[in-house]
Image 1 (tube, rainbow, N blue to C red):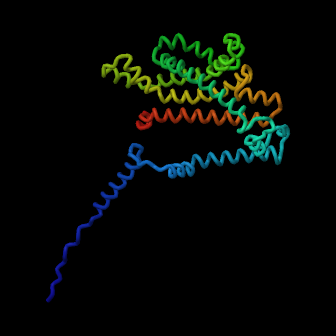
Image 2 (image 1 turned 120 degrees about the vertical axis):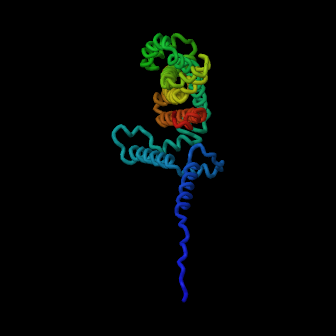
Image 3 (image 1 turned 135 degrees about the horizontal axis):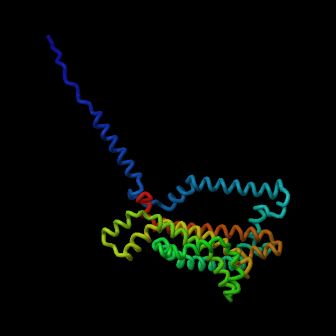
Length: 312
């Protein structure tokens, strides 16, 4: 008689699989973190990734809608007082024409002379405002005495529009170039000072206590706590300062200048060269955006420690 002896069933391996799946999930999250070292991507891969990103696609759609509406309102259904605005196709053809009707296009030396002069003025004003405004903002944030003495004066002068300074600048500064640069740097100066001040005041008090426990001198605190801690706010202020420098420049060039993109726009207005007005405006927008993007990229590179700490 055959006796069937029951055999012990094999032990289940589910817990092992569960442990393995949890480990895989942890490894996946670790690889997706910002601190995980990544391989260098090729130019083609990076370009394709940028062109298919949500930011680029939405931006392209926004530009397309804007230009379609512009064309419809200037070439198809023209509302009252829109007849003097050139449609984008005509404007673009004039911009790239080798023989433009009003003398300004990408093929005329005059166009690049205006761009070069305006760029030199803006960057001279911007660098001056940073060299003076950033140290002043750090001083105001670090010293209650300086804040009490100087900040009320800064707040009194800040609301005055840059164009209101034009007559005074022309009288005080004999050279026209100096007057235009002075008017340009005013708005960017105040933006730099206030954002730097806010950056210093935003630093957590615990960092100063830790520095004191480590025996830092006052200069050590300045260079290793105050300046790095205020840096994110400083670069935010620099982006704002660059933007206001460009539109302050236009006002100065329209009134006191004899060259530059602001003068080009004003001269086109007096001569009824309407395409030149839009060429100057669009060029200003492109230059301003590129300048702000350059500052933003530099700020992101210098503030990598801040991003890795999650904004701490």
